[in-house]
Amino acid sequence: MAEYMIEARNLVKYYYLDNFKIAKSKIRVLHAVDHVSFNIEKGEIFGVIGESGSGKSTIGKCILRMIEADEGDIFFDNENISRLNSKQMKARRRNMQMIFQNPLASFNPKMTIGKAFYELGHVYHMKTQEVTKKIRELLNYINLDEDVLSRLPKEISGGQLQRLAIARALMLEPKFLLADEPVSALDVSVQAQILNLLFELKEKRGYTILFISHDLTVVRNVCDHVAVVYLGVIVETGPVCEVYNNLLHPYTQALLSAKPKEHPLEQKERMILEGDIPNAINVKEGCRFASRCPKFREGLCDNRTPKLRDAGNGHFVACHYALPSDVLD
Ligand SMILES: Nc1ncnc2c1ncn2[C@@H]1O[C@H](COP(=O)(O)OP(=O)(O)OP(=O)(O)O)[C@@H](O)[C@H]1O
Ligand SMILES: [Mg+2]
Image (cartoon, rainbow, N blue to C red; front, side, top):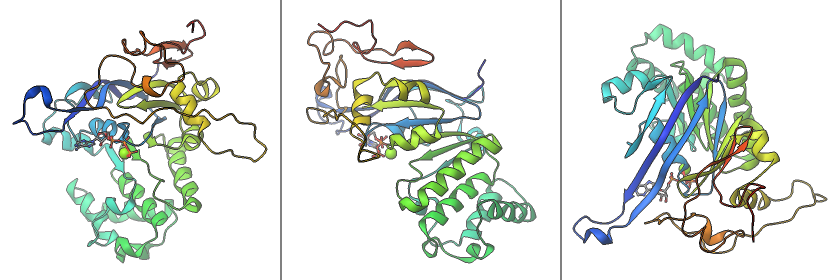
């Protein structure tokens, strides 16, 4: 039986976009995350993938309780943390660290890198000597010289700063890392360094990582499981090898076919998504992908929300017409 580091059950996060003074019926509700459930096994990298605005970061922030979900439960290492107060959460948060898209966001621009490490250590009552020892070990691990400690974040390259952000997150020896698009702000030449570092953290140190990305190839290369999200819901999920070898949801198929060819001679049919990208405001019953879906059928897709269905080998898909036994007339 798999042991889970994170169990997210029925997470819901809505944003109310209008002033409450207007009539209740006119308030627009953005369904950023809508009844999302998934489990992350201990020691794996779990990828969350989807277009911009699909709710990836909101899912991650709800899990770390950086924002409060409206509904649902989050279990961290078998403990339900959904209703812990801020003092109780502080003790747990030591074990759950975050790496941001832009490494500059991880550091105070006016504080030297060294001070940023010591400050985090002191918040968690680490002794100065202990922090110094840990910093040396981590700098050695990420292959950076101690002279970076006296520099400000703006005096360090993006790739080096992201390695330092990861090192700082590791200082507290957390059990879980949330990496929200950790390479998308970086130059292609240094992306591989960061990805290798995260992969090595899993392989050699047993870290559990939630990896948010919009890059299908990256997810395929580093993740064990993947969840594809579209307008706040999971449309397809499963082990990476199962999902990528047998793409079932029309949205996942379109995402992959939209990717440029990796080789000029590669045979590739492009599937063009029709229709405008809708938003998740005041969504009604029916499939959220219906307006752009090539398999759309009136009556079912626009009236009934598809649930995740078992496609075998841990692979699940939320589409009325994705399984071989589903008949398209
Ligand atoms: N504080 C907020 N108030 C209102 N709407 C919000 C807020 N935060 C996020 N949203 C909306 O929720 C939806 C999901 O946002 P989220 O940041 O989770 O998307 P994302 O998948 O991480 O996108 P990206 O790839 O661009 O980072 C978007 O439509 C966004 O505009
Ligand atoms: Mg995001």
